[in-house]
Image (cartoon, rainbow, N blue to C red; front, side, top):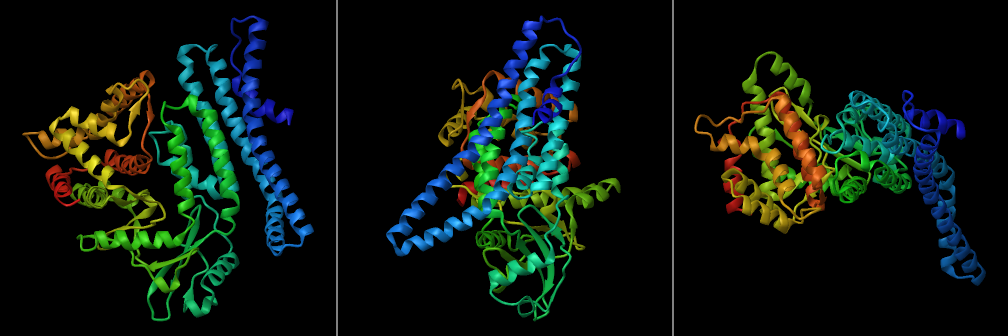
Length: 525
């Protein structure tokens, strides 16, 4: 174990010889070593507390058996199942927990290392450390699967939370997922739907169309000839997600000092809620139907129809709509100079999300490229409703009010509404919140108020970098220490969409795509 620590953690702190006394160097290494030890002990402590709880359960079960109660047998069998899971849990704790310890430890050592580096070399050295740690996380995510993989996928679309280097490295997790063997898939389907596979489907393709962290999708044919997409949940997820989420909290505690100041407790809690909610496909089925009804009739936009008879807690069957992923289509259109079609596709996407958020207060919260298809007729298809969010009426109306106030320049209304919704800075001053709103809505406001044209004028990369640099500086001075949980998924959605819009810079007409939703949301809550 000592050799592993030396190679993987301590070596991250190596730098050129610097002007410091032997005593100062020993003190720095001791301080950093204690920080790493604290993270390692926290991971081990989590396992020990679980083991202690298991021991207490065993003692209770044994006493119940001595009394001969009927409930004792049920408790005993539950305990037996729990014990059988522990070898896998210990292995998972060992691998994942040690990886997180190395990552958080190396960041804590960074403070010591940075003190002895020339200022000109610090950015490159920090980026190298980010890349090394991101690759550690990717390797463990692919190896362990489960919630770790899902968390990595979530973080890969959050440049607002992680450095660009992390986002770039985590992007591989969107596609590089090993599918479950077909026999495991068959077992889940037949057990959950209580029927042989051949009774349920006339044809079922063994090779999956796609594999993700929570489930994988196969194409099949019903006995009436309809082509369907069958999403099957990976077996055994319930057994590992609780442990994975506990490890995530340890990880966030270890690295938060290296990230922009933010309410990471709320963010972590919302990620945990999202991951757990995705394990019940019945909830996803309801969300698919609800959002499908909401967007039904919108030209050029489709949501697959649910096949109720072949859906359950771990199996979700829906209409199969062939198409290509959105990003390659946009790349081809952009390279061919078909900018009107790029603007049309992205305009329809923006229109659908403004309708979900501002009109319904209920939205699909994972619009990454893999969940958006373009058909041969240029219809836009929205997939995967495992991550959805319901905004209480107070929040739906509040975000509408902020958008309207930002366009007409009513700063007092923005601040009052942010306060009502639960946003707060460490000092209580509004500057950081106003800077945040300005970064989000400046382009829409400028286009709406422009007397020369209605198209959004997208900023250049240098201008975006300048805005983000100024925002981060403001957050360092006065961080946002409290955000409402309802905002986390909303920020994820518009952060992902914002990345698309900034990359392709579509010529969007604000009056066509934005203002009708503002007026409509004001009239029809």
